[in-house]
Amino acid sequence: MSLSDETVFSKLNSLNETQEGIVSIAQWVMFHRRHAKRFAQLWFQRLKESSAPRKLNLVYLVNEVVQQMKARKKEEFGIAFSPIIADACEAAYKGSPADVQQKLRRVIQVWRQRAIFDPDVLDGIDQRLDDVDKGKSSAGAGRRLGGGIGGTTPAELTRLSGAQSKLNGQLTHSTIAFGSASDEYKKYMEAEAIPPPAVYVARLSQLIKTLDIAHAAVSDALSSRKELIKNLESLLETNKTALAGEEAQLKEVEDKKARTEDVKKDVENMLLSGMMDDKNGDTAMRSTTPDIEPPREVEALTPPPFTEEPAYQESGPFSFQQNSPTKTQPPGDLLSSMLQYGNYNKTTAPPKPADNPMAGMEGLDADVVAMLLKGVNNAKGNGAPPSQPQPMAEDDDDEYHP
Image (cartoon, rainbow, N blue to C red; front, top):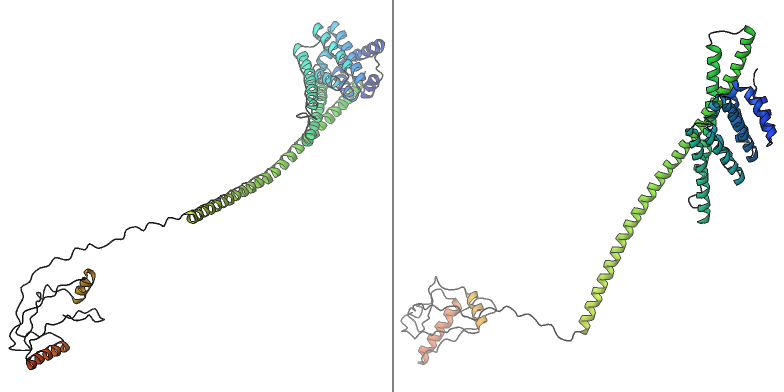
């Protein structure tokens, strides 16, 4: 006897919280134990769409079915519900009132006491419910700290969370549908004995419907997966664009900071320079003691050494003491030496016989020779002794005339 989805949903919708209603539908479900996997899939789908009280009734229905089948040593429904029971309990527990959550906890405790499911399955259920409780505690603590610090999910991650949750639900649906379709295909297509044609056609028609359901479930999961990947890529691209902009902003801030530091250093140097100038000006204004002039460098007053040279006699009314031609200093040096020391030696030679008035005058200037001859002639005419030669005044030029 075939079992349509509409019939299953109709039975589940008629479920109420009374003991009689739950037991009657449980008997109907156990009668169709060959479709245990398909029923588990439809039951989970209906549970996710129901309200909190109806979710509790659906859990009560599964509890009745699996316990009755366990007592009869039939494992069809236990095997069918084991992959999805943890997700189903989490969906029924999350968002339900506290009294409903306590009743769900009580059902799970009974399953553990009576070993309805494997310990791993039961541990997974407890872990899921504990995670829900921890999530509520974290959210409450965030609100107490001032509006959900750490408990508010960004909009981008909210979309991702919704897409991931949708994918998880559809994966569960597709897994059940795919497993059921594979089992039926193996049962009908790989059987050793082929039933009569009329029965075989009916079974193949049912297999086609099961494969269509599995196809739709897997397609939905695939679409959800693509949607999640698209959201992830969009989020990644958005963050890459934001990263480029933030790197440019960081570079701009660093440049502005470096320029500001340079300007600050320049202003500080200007301030220090101005303070030093003001300090120096104040010191100069306050100081009344003249600066002490450093001693000047003065050439030593020791006269040059005097070397006595032999004088020679000259045939004329005058005699001159002269140095050797090789030892004579230039007239300019002699003049500067006498100006520097303020004194010079004057040597007057004793008069000699005037045999030749021109004797000894070789090399003298014409004006000097004329002057000397005039003095000689005057002395002869007047009979007076010749006067001593007077030192010559210095001309404006640097030449010294003896």
